[in-house]
Structure formats: structure tokens, C-alpha cells
Image (cartoon, rainbow, N blue to C red; front, side):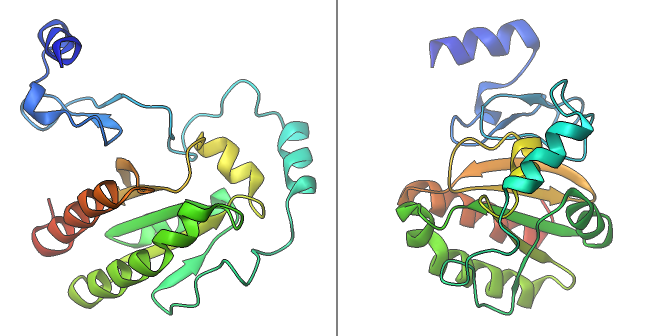
Length: 191
């Protein structure tokens, strides 16, 4: 906590706006530039990292499976599966709220949060017209996962108004409840 306070004094951030469980730091006035604070993701639509050559992306696509494993994929009508950056970009540009869950079929925590994520998706879609809930199977979408910088599973990226606004790890009960509260606020109040 001392490091957070020291960091907040140096870069002008309020320590009350920082949560070690979310991935973005916000400036004290709630606006301005956001700074990355964790290692579980980035916006895959942004500038390509140095490693992302056409050959590297083609190699990742070749290693990916053709479709998500049906046993692990959500069967909930409120959740769609995506595999490419262009599918993500289309969804983000057309919906007011987009939540993307990254999971792996072999991950026990991912399977554990699946019914809770489906419940949150159904609830939010009932209250917010146009909200999109997507999921990415890390085995079927290796290029998207690598471009998104996801190294912790399960995690979610939340987009609002076409912009990545937060990232959450959701593998533990308390972390999932914090994510759920943030989605409830977004669906109800837009903040």
C-alpha cells in the first residue's frame, strides 16, 4: 500500500481510485490518460507489438483449433464465442458495453466461473440493450489471446463506448464478485 501511495504522489493519482485487483489506474479526476497496472492484458485492437509479424500471427493461427471445444464453451444464448481481432473490433464498435472472457477448456477455475459468468451476462443483457458478452477459447484463438496479452486465466476485458475501460481476474470468488459489481454498475448507471 505504501508503494501505491508513493506512486500516486509521483504520477498524480488518487490511491482510492486504485484497486490491485483491476488492471487500470485512473487519474484523480476520473478522466485523462489511463495507465496499465497489471500483466493480464491489453487491447488487442491497439498498435501491434514488435513480435506481431504476419508470419508470427499466421503461425499462431495454424496452432489454433478450428472451433472452441464444445464441452467448455458456453451454451448460454447471452454469450457469443469469438476467435479473431476483427470479430472483437466489430462487437466493440457496435455495442455500448462489451465484456470479453478469456478461458481455456483445461482450466478448472475457468470451468468454475462459467455458470456465474452466464448468470451475469443474462442479468446485464436484460437491463442494458445492446450489451455483448463474448468468450475467447485460448486454444482456438491463440493469435487473439497473444495480441491481447492475456497470461492469467480466467480474466475479462470490459469495453465501454468502444474503449477498453477495465480488466479483471475472475478466478477467485471475491475477484468474481468485484467484477460482477462493476458490471452491475455499468449496466445500471453507465459508470
